[in-house]
Length: 52
Image 1 (spheres, one colour):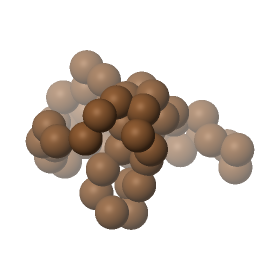
Image 2 (spheres, helix red, strand yellow; image 1 turned 135 degrees about the horizontal axis):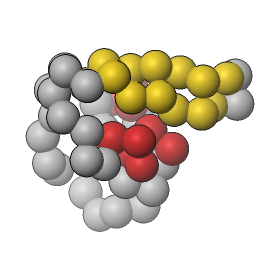
Image 3 (cartoon, one colour; image 1 turned 120 degrees about the horizontal axis):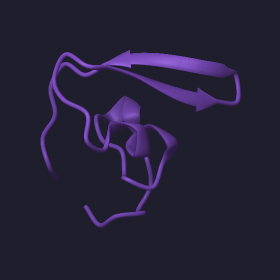
Image 4 (tube, helix red, strand yellow; image 1 turned 45 degrees about the vertical axis):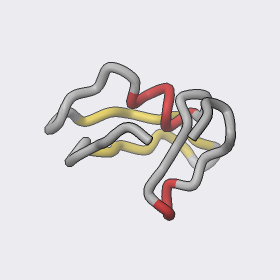
């Protein structure tokens, strides 16, 4: 999928331009990342990933 095409975390994909995508760039498996969202800071653990 091309960069900037959108973000659909519930469908299993995000872009590097979304807040979640930017936080994931450079993250490794097992790492906990923080994302600033309208509802506040959210924490996610990276379990697995793959390139589109």
